[in-house]
Image (cartoon, helix red, strand yellow):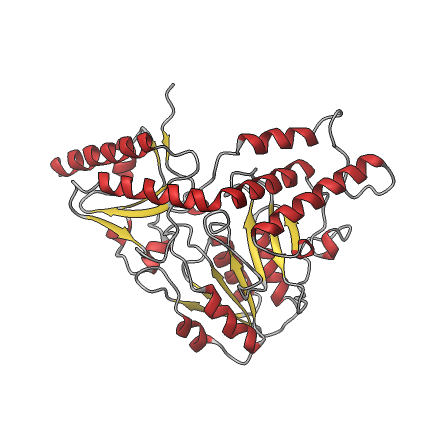
Length: 382
């Protein structure tokens, strides 16, 4: 059976073959299968060395000290660890975040509200960005944490994290940033980007699922309380036996991403332009998000007069999304699109198209032609 053209890279990326090959060396008896925490024999030492080598590669992509990288099961856990860990034990703590964050942040902040924390929910601009002044105006004497994403997972828009972070650092307020959709898509340098906690994911960067990392700044030292206990691994911040093969895979994926970053951004810009050019015969197509402050691989489009569900049914040869994969179990319109001011009807007419490393010119030409055909037919039978 012919596979549909994959245009859902924002949901997950295929593992790079070089990553898969590397991971296979850390699974079986003839490989490095030991427990990295086993300090009494060579099997453990070899596994630990592999974990630390991968830690350096992940740190290198974001220009961090390897000691600032804490392994987790993914960006969702990283977000939970950062937010809950920063707020733990602080009665009456105030948190600032936005209504269009990833569910890993939204749901965590809602849970903390039930525990007695105070949360200010910022409304994004129509282009999906959070303004510097908005954050400043929301700060209070008891504000302990601000949590904003670097790149929005549904819109691809980029927040001005540098300006916001510089002000928060002056005020001594912790800044957590979800960078799951930013790593490998844009340059990140925590040496010049004033953030304290930064969440990363393996499977968004052509690495395996089930592994991620949290950057925890060391200078000045950021203290967060562990959320998983049982052995004191990862300098006491995250207990649990480390999955060596997944960690090695994430390290290799981040190493490849660092070497390919500039070229891939350039190629994705060209593919994006070709895709959008192919849709120009259609009227009533709206780009949701910012045209300028964005990464190239994510495009959220609304089609006038056509609901997304019908369009997806017609686009059987394309794999696309109506929103975040983490929220796709619901039939409600995207809370991100509603958050930037779209009506329920407009939000129901939107699809997210995301391209990546293995997308070809032929695929984007096929995809745009298919969309023009299906949208035209659906409009004709209204």
